[in-house]
Image 1 (spheres, rainbow over the protein chains, first blue to last red):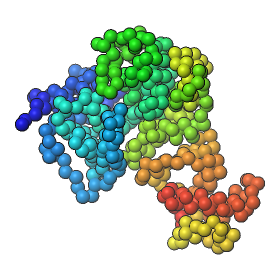
Image 2: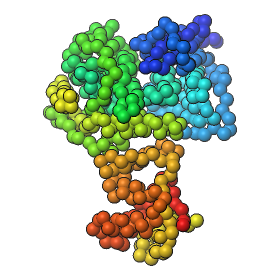
Image 3: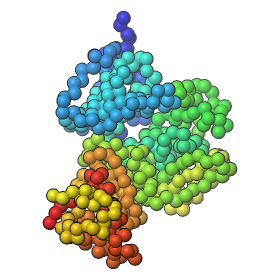
Image 4: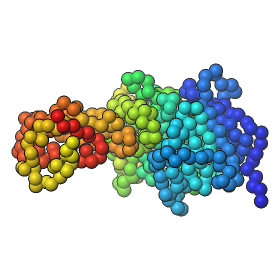
Length: 345
Length: 112
């Protein structure tokens, strides 16, 4: 039986991210749509005449169709056995990451393979039957490849939500379940501007670090929806199902615009407490850096990791870092955070 | 080259250490390790493994002295001059930390 992998003529899509020109090439409609949606704020009609980063994504029917060979000298860098039945199917996939010469190979077994060639400034993704995958998975794999290429261009992704108010940025890093998205929405609905729900970028600007928007859909759990009246009553066309969560564009619900490149001022590490009121605890910078490292740094290339480490050090030196003990006063969070932002102005 | 982690492996043997050895072995950070001092504590990132570590204030001072120029004896003398500590206890703690840092691949040793 032949599966429909959505083959169409090879098509090129162009994007520009803060000086990095991106070419995305695919012959599969299943692979084109999620990526175009994901990078919709960065679309370009033409690219500037500079060397672009190129990502080719290919739909294949069977694992044996993936034309990637790995040499015997390849070195394993990381591996994960996966978490069956996880509520976060993308990030809990089983994988093995290998370094083979200049190629970084991420093998996701029955899902596909990513190959990032830093010298060629090119990434290839081979996805097995993408028509059966949730769009969020395709987006996740594309983002992984893009992140690796961008790191080599001095643009570093951090696993955090991010907002901006009056030119000052707030980063809320952390794993799911710690109140990251809930605290983020609480600030967003009070007039903070949106930067990103999980993929803001950091750029080394010499003695300081810039925080750059990477606007994507906001993913929320049903539990988070229940905290906010405007989400509870949002129509299904706005708050769309996106297994296992739901997702919306901030501009469809909040009268906020997309924030601009700004100077990060605060980093909040939330965790939920069973108490009526939230409070903040100032963190020593060494502890803050220690907590940020797992949210940002993957050491695949020592030189790139060294630069990224220095960017994270600058970030921590530039901002105040707090542990946010996040109580039940969810809607009042801006009253706790905004004075801190205004203090430094 | 003597293996310091073996030479100093037994905690009860601190008082029996070969004092000559203390003044022959110099220590320096592995070049693959990035280090930054923040508020007196040091965060280390080992680029060869991706692991990171935090040293407290005392550990940070010891790390700063591991430049390849100071022997273990020199470092011990600095600790005794800066802190109100029993010399044997300071040596025991110093050796324990050095032992761990070497085992983690963060420090390199050289015999003069």
